[in-house]
Image 1 (cartoon, rainbow, N blue to C red):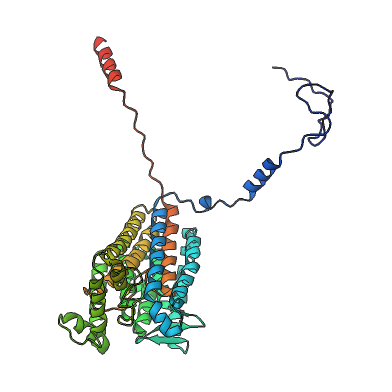
Image 2 (image 1 turned 45 degrees about the vertical axis):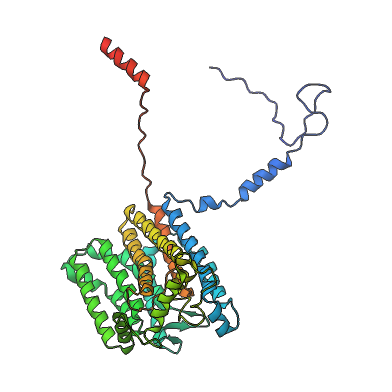
Length: 444
């Protein structure tokens, strides 16, 4: 095919106006046509628009399930903290909203950080896991300096202008450290039990430092995280059973040597406890608050127990206030939220392609969901008083921030999921066509 000959006519610039004879069709006379302002602005807007949906796109619906349940739980927690802390805030600070504003400030800080963490790759955790664990252990050691603050017999707070709890950070860093290092430890050469238990010395050190601050409740949760990570790593069963036996023995010893803990355990075992002013005060008033709520509750903000009758009404015993104001229905909603969180965690674990994802998600699941049911069990009288808050709902900036950061870590794992490709089934012929095909086959 011959190519057309080139012409010597130079190409007119696009900006040059075209002139034409008057009355010729399809051409403009006089000045050149100006570009449409709407199209120019539209192209500029598209160039500068920030598409949030693209930035936080996940291949799996697990991202939206976990993020949505978390956000709803945090909002419910803020509402209940506002109601439960109003009286104590007024008595201590002279304002009804001091406790709520502190909790809301922590949520405003933590939620964007959670979304930012959800975009991190797995290589980030492998690079910084060791530094993070050693740094949080160092922060926990600072509670034994003049910067440390003692509260309720536990020395687990730091005051550097802002009070926070380093032990809450240790929960997250231990889960991530075990997720990064356990797969490598299992593959090492040497005696099986020795190489695993000896390699976990940094984790033991973190647990001992928390125990030194007399916070047995937090230490139990950290121990549960360690056992969960071991279980999800695929180690032999004996590597899980022996630590559980040793941990139970350690809890018994620590309870015996502490008069305060023994008093709480004895009051729990005594069904007819009459020490209303000391050991039995908080458990009894927690049960009475739940009983007062009934099925539908007395109404939001109408609790009587929060008027200095129930200690830690906005913290450890916020579930009792939920039961009193929102009734059994409100309690079932809270339990359902944590069950849904557990379902989201399990779905992410089942779709994981990397052992790091399974181990860290399993540890964080036991931390948040397990601690929630421990707190609920304490309020219901099923467990002795341990002093652990209800995650995402109880007041406490450190606990809320670290819980949301931990969920952000799990959200980042959803990017590693491979979507399941469904095979399209071939369309079946209609009954008439099927009968026609059968008739043709018989005539052949």
